[in-house]
View 1 (cartoon, rainbow, N blue to C red):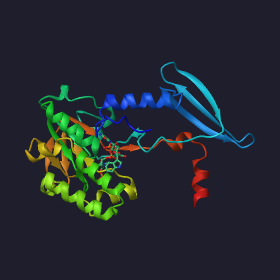
View 2: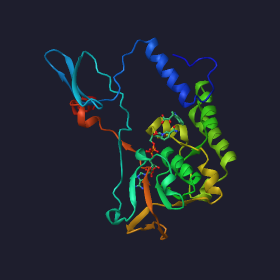
View 3: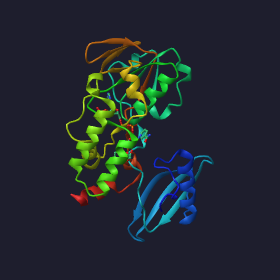
Length: 271
Ligand SMILES: NC(=O)C1=CN([C@@H]2O[C@H](COP(=O)(O)OP(=O)(O)OC[C@H]3O[C@@H](n4cnc5c(N)ncnc54)[C@H](OP(=O)(O)O)[C@@H]3O)[C@@H](O)[C@H]2O)C=CC1
Ligand SMILES: O=C(O)C(=O)Cc1c[nH]c2ccccc12
């Protein structure tokens, strides 16, 4: 179902919500909100799926029986915090990016954001706007694009332009827009952004203003964390800094293995 013809190129939150509502009424979908699936298995005799779910707000359990089950839960389910040597000794608070609301209570404090994917870069930008002394850990090379550059790349792909040429153009545009960001601690990956998206599914970082803040040294960039001792964090380049809080924008793990009771069989069959 297409967006309305007067929709802007980048649909804002309200417009997207309206789109979802009209999608639901157009296809007469019956969404079950606030419901978490806890297990699903296929009964071999009846050939039907039995899905156990829990309604979060009412704390009641439900069972659905269906001929088909579509699993579209994606990769981004449960916040992932990596093991970091000495994290248990850290004096300040630390939490996953999914718990982030805004930077109000960190005004004037020093906060470290770990990870420079889309969550990390957006949170670093927001913290800095709240007057927080913000730093970000960039562990490995990353592509930093803009919404417009991604849009151009997608249009070119849709016209049939080969991926390697699209990547060449997109990287060139990004270089014109941001300059050589490897000077700021962000080396570029050797493969192009759309190649990476298509081969391993990893999305490039889409800048919302963090790059400019990094360029102006309002946000500091560090390499990976070597270890933590109290409020002191040591980085791979030997630098040591004090922080009041750490936000782990280190991605998500899929939880499908825990509730979809046949996944191992599906994997075995595919091999
Ligand atoms: N506005 C939007 O459209 C937004 C979209 N998203 C999307 O949501 C999905 C999840 O994004 P996000 O939450 O950013 O997670 P991602 O998985 O995309 O990024 C995680 C980041 O954390 C880094 N990282 C992981 N472990 C460590 C570690 N031990 N030390 C240092 N760095 C580490 C990764 O680096 P490395 O490469 O080294 O592993 C990577 O930079 C993505 O598809 C993203 O595009 C998210 C936010 C906003
Ligand atoms: O699916 C994602 O993770 C997105 O953020 C959207 C997206 C899909 N394909 C892309 C290619 C380049 C940049 C963003 C996307």
